[in-house]
Length: 49
Image (cartoon, rainbow, N blue to C red; front, side, top):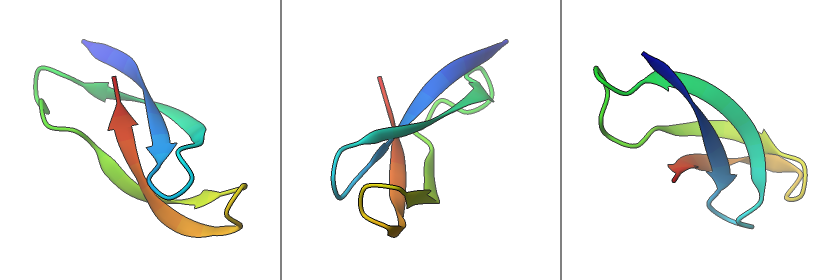
């Protein structure tokens, strides 16, 4: 069962990306390095509720 999650920039708190993950297999929060349009650089993005 895949669910849609939102990724938020840890620097500027801007919600830039959406993706999906299987919550039965991966209960922990996802963290990826993505490009932030507001910061104009690659920053860590964390999953939010």
